[in-house]
Length: 387
Image (tube, one colour):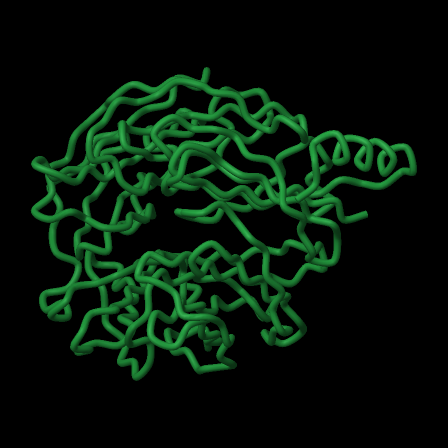
């Protein structure tokens, strides 16, 4: 790992030579956050650790205080910690406010009330099961707007306008969907499907799979015994979904929808809990997916995470797969294929992976940094120094 003084000297020399700085990677842990340095062409260097009291689990990025710099919201043992972005590569975050909330799980971000300010939606586990909505005040602070009781822990959340009324709704991997009222409150949740797999769903993703302008869903199952493959649900534009038959995706978690081959159709990345790595499935634009390739990788645990983003600026989405304390990055190639991975160490207990432009370079540079919240006490940031 580079010492901060060496990093500062190297970064200054690169800037003086006219090198452009790009997006980095941030990771988190029990009491901190780590920054990983991107050295170009997809290579990252161990980076900068930002301490977070109580640790850092899942996270989301947005400009919460309106200063044009990306901030973070991460859940931890005491609630949700807000970290304000500084735009400085050696000290990418400073502590902001903390939302006290016992049982806070993986937070999502979106504009729930249409005022142009990012808001937070937080599932709550424990003795009380619910989804809390916090409206952003535009200065990095938040106000509790609503608590929506749920019949189960909810799992992972996604936001989308599922009934096409211009208001954000939420759906969960706990097989729940709740329509939004447009003010940060939600109607009572209902089941997404009538007969979920025995062990329930493990992950969820939302996107317009068949290009009809309506938001669809993909859910995955990693339960034993396996009684379900990936569940692809097309929005029927009448308040429900039509399930597309699938024969893939058993023992998978955390699906991602993205156009991997540039054909204007959403493709699917599925994290594999049984064999490690991930599966790349190309979409046909009608709800069907076909296996393109399997990305080999080490075995992961149930809470493994992935990202899909262009980290080397070539316009092709890359894939990152988190296994224990190692991040494997597969660089995207033409046609939805991927190169052999290279690995980066993260914090000891990474909880999620974020990609964003952290340290003030032009967004047009097209290369992202990596941020990894870590349950051991912070966030790791990997800065992207691609010229």
